[in-house]
Image (cartoon, rainbow, N blue to C red; front, side, top):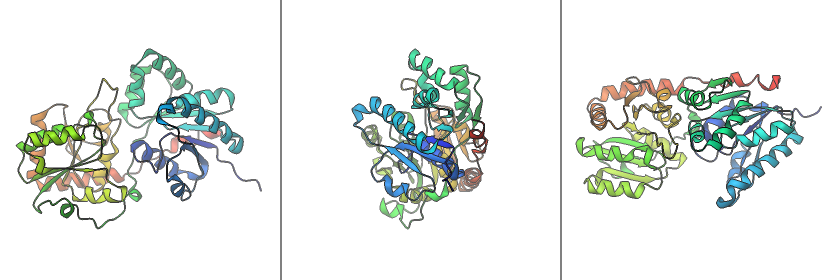
Length: 374
C-alpha cells in the first residue's frame, strides 16, 4: 500500500524549539491534526532532538549568515518547498506569517496549490512602512483562500489597511500546559527575596515598547515590600538598570536575564502579579498582536496588568482576569498595582478567572476542510 501523503504544508520561518509567541501558536496548530501535515521551517542548532519527537515530518532549510538572510532565505524556502511538493504532492499551504508569504504566492503560480496566511499584527503594520510593501503584500493577501488572524485587532487592522474582501478567521493563541515542566527551583531563595515580598513579574524581549521603564518608575510610589522581577534580554536592559539605580529602587528590581523554558513555570508560580505594558511603536510599526504571556500568567493563576492596546483586548477582560489601563496613564498604573498589592482576595479571584480563560479550548478546525477543496 502506498504511503499516505499529507495534504497540507505548514510553512514557517519561526518554529520550535525556537521560543516565541508565533512559534507556540503554529506548533499548537500542528498538534491539532498532525497526521494531515508536513512542516517546512528554518534550521536551528539542536533542532534534531525536537524534530524526532514529533508525530509529523519536519524539514528545515539551512541557516545562512545574518547579512545574507534577506536574500537567501526566500530562495532557500522556495527551492525546499518545490522539492517537498515532488515528495508529498501537498495541495494546500498554511503560511505562518506575512513575512515570507511572497514565497507561497510565487509557488501558487507554478504548482496546483492554494494557501492561507496567518497574520499577527506587526506583519500587517509593515504595509504602512512603504507603498511598495503595501502594493506587493496586498497582491499576496488577495490570492489567499483565507486570512487567519490571531486577534480581532489584527483582523480589523487587516481590513483597514488593505481594504481586501478576502475571508478572515480569528483564532486566538492558546496555552499549551505541556510546555511547562514542574520544577523545585525556589525563586525567592535564588534572588534573596524576603518572604513577605509582593512580586511583580514581566518576561519579554527588553525593547522600548514593552514598557518596563514605566513599572520601574511606579515602584517608588508602591509599598517597599513590592519587588519587580524582569525576565528576558534586549537592548534596553542597561538603560533600565540605570533607571532603577537613579530612582533608588535597584535593590527591588531584579533583572534575571533569559529564563530557561524549564524554569519559566517557577517564575510564574512565584509571582503575585504579572504586568507587561506593551505600547504601539509607530516608528517601528510594532504592536502587541495578542500577548501569549498574559494567558501563561493566567494559567498559573496570576492577575495581569496591561495597556489596552492591540490584540491585548482579546487576552484580557478588564476586571475579570486582570486590569486594563489607557496607555501612558501613570496614575492609573500606580492605582492598579496598589489595588492588587493591597487586595490578595482580588488577586486570587482574577487569577482563577485567568486560569479558566487560559485553558478554554480553541480550534483551527475551520482550516481542515480547505485542502479537500483545493
